[in-house]
Length: 294
Length: 282
Image (cartoon, rainbow over all chains, first blue to last red; front, side, top):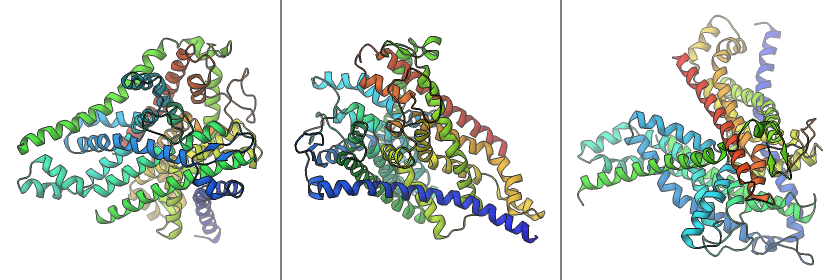
């Protein structure tokens, strides 16, 4: 190859590389802009006022307060509720698809899950208001059904596709010889599934749960529409709660740019970013370990 | 309890959970289709809202979603495909490649509302693009990148190595073999990836809340620097913010149905292209 041809080949490779580097750059910019816009909030409000108070009232005339504890607890509570529902249903469905379902049933379930994954969150939130809300209100005898329970159920629906498809991958990846050995020793198919296959795929299953959890923590529209948005520490699953994502969504449109309130919302975003980052990182680490073993 | 009994009950429970998932999707689709279909007619699709959004159609929201999705596509499709080409065709196993992959995975986990904050800080304020189609589209474009990259790389992976080797053995350079032997085969798969990403972007609300979506506009956007109405945002408004919520419920259902149909059509066409592409490779 002549010199010019070689140069051209190298330039083309660099061109593609630059696109890859851009992705790193985007992630770093997000992190940088969140930190940059959070620092004024931390200096003006103070770490203790921000993290240890549950009292969030930025528009109070004389002394606005910016405690995020109530939002953090609300986010964790709604997410926890979602996982209580989504984990058993998700793993159950994944095990059903991987081990029991006939090819025909699989052919129905897989597109069902893909379509469910594609339904926009604002549509799920809307159904939380018009469909699930009244059901909860009637069953529990409440004035309205917009509360943490509603949010949890909707978030469970939203994280199911993630948990199902990744758990199914993990279960299907368990080598056949594990199954054959268990069946050969006289175990039946249920015992094989519960005592051999699921434990072998456990790291992949846990990673899928973590990813589903990450999605639930960061989900905005469903909780914004369906949880009632009362900014306080939640009492129970029947209380109206306001999560971190909802707070940003409700207030960012009303605040003047570069005010303390504006920076405080970026600080909430930063905490949110760090929470989901850690959850995804842990999921990633677990998944890598599991790939090395398998 | 005998172990056979346990097996029967266990399998029944698994079957029940799978059935529950189908039931959930069924209820979602059934409710929206039944209550949405009655308001949808040509007028609903082709006219603007009237009388304080209590009557009329959703035409500006359809157009707005179309415009913003175009901007998203213009940003995320080329960058996504080029990155996938780098990762699958050029990248080694070094630290840099690991960092790029880590960044992609982390980017896919960033909450959509955080992308909204990012869009405000970078595009609306930092680059002075204001709340506009451009700001919203660029924000969605960056958010969509991980989907486009991952799916495009999958498409490149399915091209057998023999396609590359055959061309290289005949004296073609690396880029020549990628261009003539790999890309033509991978293009349908890459289209699948882009469409899947765009379907997600078209249904997103949180990132456009503060970067350009408007409550109500009496006219269609004229330039990329105008605000716009969008289907998901319109649904959010009609479901929670409107002054006569109960009265506009049918419009909200109609909007939800149009949005769902749009997203499902995009997903289905992506899935069909992918299936054809796989058959062709066989």
